[in-house]
Amino acid sequence: MTEDVSGYKIVHRDEPTMYFFGVTTSRSTIMRVFPVWAEILGLDRAQLIGVDIPLHAEAEQYRKAVAQIKYDPLSLGALVTTHKIDVLEAAGDMFDELDKYARLCGDLSCISKRDNRLIGHAKDPIAAGSSLQHIFKPGYWDRTGGHVLCIGAGGSAISITYYLMARPEPGDRPKRIIVVNRSQPRLDKLRSIVAGLPPTIEVMYILNEDPVRNDKIMADLPAGSMVINATGMGKDRPGSPITDDGVFPMRGIAWELNYRGELDFMHQAMAQERQRNLTIHDGWQYFLYGWSDHIAEVFHKEIAEDLFDQLAEVAEVIRPSSDSR
Ligand SMILES: NC(=O)c1ccc[n+]([C@@H]2O[C@H](COP(=O)([O-])OP(=O)(O)OC[C@H]3O[C@@H](n4cnc5c(N)ncnc54)[C@H](OP(=O)(O)O)[C@@H]3O)[C@@H](O)[C@H]2O)c1
Image (cartoon, rainbow, N blue to C red; front, side, top):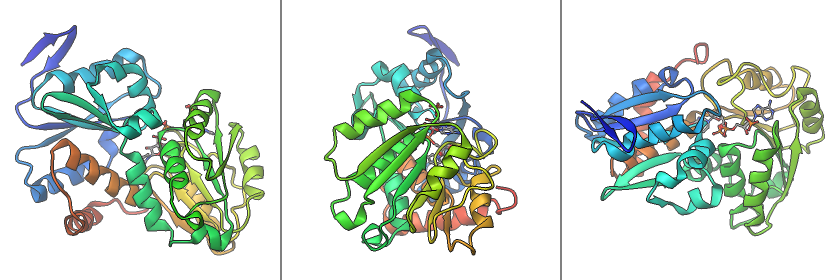
């Protein structure tokens, strides 16, 4: 059944429904993982519906997607990927409440409802932070003197920067984070967020889309540095932000935020894995932490560590092999 509410065509769902706002949602492994997790979590008849939205879409498209959750009782919330900044900019006024991270970071990754109030959360600093904890042992940056090069200054880059800057132990923070983005507004946004935080890390902002220049920036990094592909290239769009000639830092860490798609950046790192003594991570842990946390929020569930381990174990069986990611 559909109904016009405040100028939006709202579909009244028959089952508790969570949405997934992304770009190519049907290809995400969560579509196969969700029904299995829903059973383990006892989410009776729960559905996950993908909403594909083109990159930087018109504001009305974001508002329509948010209105569906706001006005339909059984539409319980959403996980937002890729459009985290755009959703908040286009539809921020439709929310009754924004959590601390959403206000601070200017993006939102999770939409939920409590007592009929529409709430926007930025949960990415938690998922990105859990992933970084999984990657690094305490004191890593102090021991190695490495820096972070993050290519892409979108929602994930904001979360990663925020998380690292907020580490209480100086040894758990790199001395410098270099953020590269192809357009100026995202760099300005990050700069304004960083300006509101204690200056625990030097952050450099570089406007650039030329992969050859990224190679040069990467070549200047000290040993042990981390290079992050936070552009979506190799999944949302073809290619990589570096060229095949780009040389990773010795004993460095390459982190591709995605776990599916062509993953060109990750393959470029894999080609140098031995020669440069690299450690390579994809976005699988990020995926697990992010989705479990968002599902817990939307369906008002607690997911303790042993339950998370169980969810991770069943997801691993469904996870695409490296050939078909
Ligand atoms: N594994 C997981 O669970 C997980 C979790 C979060 C994110 N991700 C993935 O990580 C990627 C980034 O996510 P996000 O939320 O940060 O997306 P986002 O907000 O769209 O940010 C991407 C940023 O990269 C910039 N960019 C694109 N191509 C570039 C290039 N060649 N050089 C420099 N900058 C470039 C974009 O600039 P413009 O502003 O000019 O477009 C944008 O600011 C996405 O593909 C997402 O799917 C995965």
